[in-house]
Image (cartoon, rainbow, N blue to C red):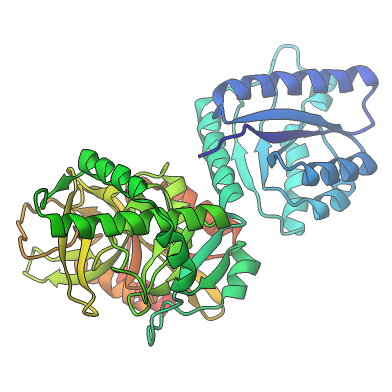
Length: 484
């Protein structure tokens, strides 16, 4: 995911009341901390000491230079001593990189028998960082705070989570989403203000008629199609191995996949949407092609749902591109004490959530009368997961996260020609579903197994998104009073 090693700048705060020898001691101890942290963090990044800053001018100039460093994806601040915060104001107002405030100190234990005022004056993180924290709050600066001794696994784990988060944000803060055929007519939840998404999230949504895509699809060679078909045979089970007509349908999807991927790569898109109402000129609605592109890490939303496409891309990166898929609630099992949700889509469910080797089938697409279409069929693997929806309400974004258990009910559905997932919402079907309806959760969702809830909290906090969690702690009466 991250090809070039990225920089994280470490900025230490101090002040000029200390003599030169003490300032050198601060710098030496800071380098020791950085060297240790570099041994513990993700090797795709490296922490560099930018400097021990002690005055307003050096702070301001340093932060401006950090802003312009394209390889720098974040900044760690630590006040080794007391560092009067007014001298940080102008610099922090300029800061454009993600920020972590590390609240630690060089020594883990107070030297009770020898402690004197020299020790107290030098080791002042306890109140130096609180002076700094006050200013950050006063300036309303978004940041991650980590508290603890720098040699502990607690600090290392939290630091690695933050590093992963800023890596994902670095990849997606300028995300481009291609919308083929715009939004499905008369569907409410797929509408939205694309300009607002650019301003708040950094997402650019560009509409393309299918005609743009057709030029790429038509230029795919027979050799490329045959090579990809061989890959299908190796990775998946084909239910129509000896039927030339059905094989031709599958190869049409291979052509679409290759053309779409070439288009997306050439124009720098990392997510996309399609629309069943607008496939003019295509032999089939992209089904298998979309599933394959999701499997490769692209974000996707059906019926022009660009918000869900962008969200899936982020969740793919949070989960290292494993076990996340576009999905929607389709139908319920309302047998008492066995209430279940069956989630699916008419074609586009990502095989990363499959419990077994997916099967490629060819079947008529019942919705829209689009004829024979190839797609993968499978059952989702059992396990704890989240169902996540990003919606736009009252002029702001709302991220709804419902904790679920995907279950293996071992039911055979021979007449259902699509992938499916079956789950139980927490704390129970009735309360969770009621809560989802009260807060306006979409019927388009992301089903994800590998996303850390802390990542979602950080995402919502960083981008001023309202986060709503539905889980075992849900009290539906209090929930309704708060949100509806």
